[in-house]
Length: 273
Image (cartoon, rainbow, N blue to C red; front, top):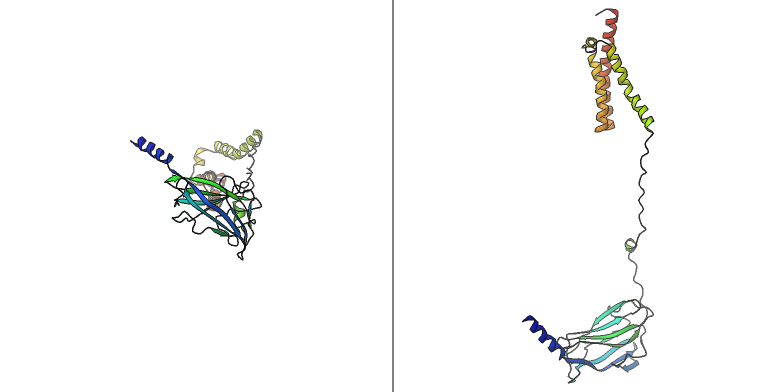
């Protein structure tokens, strides 16, 4: 059913009346009202001489949209005047209000106050064409003439416009890879760090177990081990200020514990205990 309706619509469109323009003409007048140029517009070919306007001239278009077969005036659904610059690709569309008789009600353009639909212009002429659309008739487009008007001024630059231009490409500079020392140097300093523990273990082997774990010496050995735990904790989680604070407190405890351990060893040597 839908296909049948579509075919009927296409058939009706094919037999729709054709629209045309009757007595199309352009008129150029000065600001004082003097007529500078007035010529009829041929639908068969575009006007050979471009229409030239100054900053004070007025362009007026007169025509009537009629059915080609009957010659009766028609009110189309849409009527536009198109200004197109072939070189720049800029275009402007100006709607035209048409009366029920098919004649434009107001269709004059004063260059002292050009319409906003005009595209940015240069020395290149604008191609002017008329576009007429109607759901009851076959739409049509016809070229009228070439139009030469004064070049438009460039728009003022917005203060933020440079921010939207293409900026130089950002080149990231990465930190070079860390250079590791030779393995033999790393092994030497690792052995240097571990050497105090080697000495301590040697002294522990020399000392008797009972003397090492005596109440006067064990606190000093414990504080030394606590220093090593503090360094490992600093490497894992602590900050430098925290390490200095905890190290200062632990250092005071180590001083007193070491003094007590040395006093105990001295007393043992002189035979007091």
